Image (cartoon, rainbow, N blue to C red; front, side):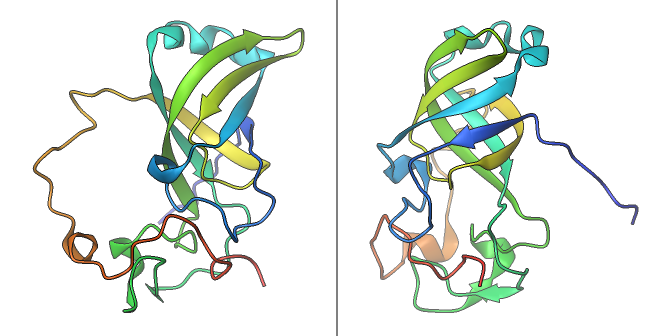
Length: 163
Protein backbone atom coordinates (compact mmCIF):
# COMPACT_ATOMS: atom_id res chain seq x y z
CA UNK A 1 0.00 0.00 0.00
CA UNK A 2 1.05 3.57 -0.55
CA UNK A 3 1.92 5.79 2.38
CA UNK A 4 -0.80 8.25 3.42
CA UNK A 5 0.02 11.51 5.16
CA UNK A 6 -2.27 13.90 7.00
CA UNK A 7 -1.57 17.37 8.33
CA UNK A 8 -3.34 18.52 11.48
CA UNK A 9 -5.99 21.18 10.90
CA UNK A 10 -5.85 22.34 14.50
CA UNK A 11 -5.13 21.44 18.08
CA UNK A 12 -7.44 20.21 20.84
CA UNK A 13 -6.92 21.86 24.23
CA UNK A 14 -8.09 19.90 27.26
CA UNK A 15 -7.38 19.85 31.00
CA UNK A 16 -5.74 16.41 30.71
CA UNK A 17 -1.93 16.43 30.81
CA UNK A 18 -1.66 12.65 31.26
CA UNK A 19 -3.91 9.69 30.51
CA UNK A 20 -4.20 8.49 34.10
CA UNK A 21 -7.57 9.64 35.44
CA UNK A 22 -8.77 10.89 32.05
CA UNK A 23 -12.27 9.84 30.88
CA UNK A 24 -12.03 6.75 28.66
CA UNK A 25 -14.76 7.95 26.29
CA UNK A 26 -16.35 11.32 25.63
CA UNK A 27 -19.75 9.98 26.78
CA UNK A 28 -18.25 9.71 30.30
CA UNK A 29 -16.71 13.18 30.27
CA UNK A 30 -18.02 16.46 31.63
CA UNK A 31 -14.72 18.22 30.96
CA UNK A 32 -14.59 21.39 28.89
CA UNK A 33 -12.06 22.03 26.16
CA UNK A 34 -11.59 23.81 22.89
CA UNK A 35 -10.49 23.21 19.36
CA UNK A 36 -8.17 25.85 17.97
CA UNK A 37 -8.21 26.21 14.20
CA UNK A 38 -6.27 28.53 11.97
CA UNK A 39 -8.22 31.46 10.52
CA UNK A 40 -7.70 29.81 7.10
CA UNK A 41 -10.62 27.50 8.02
CA UNK A 42 -13.15 30.31 8.48
CA UNK A 43 -15.14 29.23 5.41
CA UNK A 44 -14.94 25.57 6.48
CA UNK A 45 -16.97 26.19 9.65
CA UNK A 46 -19.88 27.84 7.80
CA UNK A 47 -23.10 26.12 8.95
CA UNK A 48 -21.50 24.45 11.96
CA UNK A 49 -23.14 26.74 14.54
CA UNK A 50 -26.50 24.95 14.31
CA UNK A 51 -25.08 21.59 15.44
CA UNK A 52 -25.11 20.49 19.06
CA UNK A 53 -22.43 17.80 18.61
CA UNK A 54 -19.31 17.23 16.55
CA UNK A 55 -17.25 14.20 15.71
CA UNK A 56 -13.57 14.99 16.20
CA UNK A 57 -11.04 12.82 14.39
CA UNK A 58 -7.56 13.15 15.83
CA UNK A 59 -4.11 11.64 16.21
CA UNK A 60 -3.23 9.80 19.43
CA UNK A 61 0.05 11.70 19.72
CA UNK A 62 1.07 10.04 22.97
CA UNK A 63 0.20 6.43 22.17
CA UNK A 64 2.61 3.58 22.73
CA UNK A 65 3.84 1.53 19.81
CA UNK A 66 1.08 -0.37 18.04
CA UNK A 67 -0.13 -3.70 19.36
CA UNK A 68 -2.49 -6.31 17.95
CA UNK A 69 -3.59 -7.60 21.36
CA UNK A 70 -4.41 -5.31 24.31
CA UNK A 71 -6.27 -5.42 27.60
CA UNK A 72 -8.80 -2.58 27.40
CA UNK A 73 -9.90 -0.51 30.40
CA UNK A 74 -13.26 -2.27 30.64
CA UNK A 75 -12.16 -5.88 30.43
CA UNK A 76 -9.86 -8.32 32.20
CA UNK A 77 -9.35 -10.29 28.99
CA UNK A 78 -6.93 -9.51 26.20
CA UNK A 79 -8.65 -8.57 22.96
CA UNK A 80 -7.68 -7.69 19.41
CA UNK A 81 -7.02 -4.00 18.77
CA UNK A 82 -9.85 -3.83 16.21
CA UNK A 83 -12.32 -4.98 18.91
CA UNK A 84 -11.43 -2.11 21.27
CA UNK A 85 -10.86 1.63 21.20
CA UNK A 86 -7.35 1.65 22.64
CA UNK A 87 -4.96 4.27 21.19
CA UNK A 88 -2.00 2.05 20.26
CA UNK A 89 -3.42 1.09 16.87
CA UNK A 90 -1.77 0.46 13.48
CA UNK A 91 -2.77 4.06 12.69
CA UNK A 92 -3.12 6.03 15.91
CA UNK A 93 -6.41 7.68 14.98
CA UNK A 94 -9.06 8.51 17.57
CA UNK A 95 -12.63 9.73 17.37
CA UNK A 96 -14.79 11.45 19.95
CA UNK A 97 -18.26 12.92 19.91
CA UNK A 98 -18.25 16.22 21.78
CA UNK A 99 -20.86 18.88 22.50
CA UNK A 100 -20.37 22.15 20.63
CA UNK A 101 -20.95 25.03 23.05
CA UNK A 102 -19.83 28.05 21.02
CA UNK A 103 -17.74 29.23 18.09
CA UNK A 104 -15.50 32.22 18.71
CA UNK A 105 -13.69 33.88 15.84
CA UNK A 106 -10.51 35.52 17.13
CA UNK A 107 -8.15 37.84 15.29
CA UNK A 108 -5.82 35.02 14.19
CA UNK A 109 -7.72 31.84 15.02
CA UNK A 110 -11.07 30.16 15.48
CA UNK A 111 -12.02 28.55 18.78
CA UNK A 112 -14.66 25.88 19.03
CA UNK A 113 -15.69 25.68 22.67
CA UNK A 114 -16.59 22.07 23.42
CA UNK A 115 -17.65 19.83 26.27
CA UNK A 116 -17.07 16.11 26.81
CA UNK A 117 -13.35 15.97 26.00
CA UNK A 118 -11.57 12.66 26.52
CA UNK A 119 -8.23 13.31 24.89
CA UNK A 120 -4.89 14.67 26.04
CA UNK A 121 -4.10 18.37 25.89
CA UNK A 122 -2.43 19.44 22.65
CA UNK A 123 -3.94 16.55 20.66
CA UNK A 124 -3.51 17.15 16.90
CA UNK A 125 -6.90 17.44 15.18
CA UNK A 126 -7.23 15.78 11.76
CA UNK A 127 -10.87 16.51 10.88
CA UNK A 128 -14.26 17.64 12.15
CA UNK A 129 -17.56 16.14 11.09
CA UNK A 130 -21.03 17.17 12.26
CA UNK A 131 -22.86 14.57 14.33
CA UNK A 132 -26.00 13.53 12.45
CA UNK A 133 -28.52 11.73 14.65
CA UNK A 134 -30.12 9.99 11.64
CA UNK A 135 -26.78 8.55 10.48
CA UNK A 136 -24.54 8.27 13.53
CA UNK A 137 -26.81 6.38 15.92
CA UNK A 138 -27.76 2.72 15.68
CA UNK A 139 -30.18 2.01 18.57
CA UNK A 140 -30.22 -1.78 18.12
CA UNK A 141 -26.44 -2.19 17.68
CA UNK A 142 -24.74 -5.14 19.38
CA UNK A 143 -21.43 -4.43 21.11
CA UNK A 144 -19.80 -7.84 21.62
CA UNK A 145 -17.65 -8.11 24.75
CA UNK A 146 -18.69 -4.62 25.87
CA UNK A 147 -22.30 -5.71 26.37
CA UNK A 148 -21.15 -8.33 28.90
CA UNK A 149 -18.13 -6.52 30.37
CA UNK A 150 -17.20 -7.14 33.97
CA UNK A 151 -15.55 -3.76 34.65
CA UNK A 152 -17.59 -0.59 34.92
CA UNK A 153 -15.25 2.41 35.06
CA UNK A 154 -15.10 5.72 33.28
CA UNK A 155 -11.47 6.78 33.79
CA UNK A 156 -8.18 5.63 32.32
CA UNK A 157 -5.02 4.42 33.92
CA UNK A 158 -1.67 4.91 32.20
CA UNK A 159 -1.45 1.58 30.34
CA UNK A 160 -1.59 3.16 26.85
CA UNK A 161 0.77 6.10 27.48
CA UNK A 162 4.23 6.35 25.97
CA UNK A 163 6.91 4.65 28.00
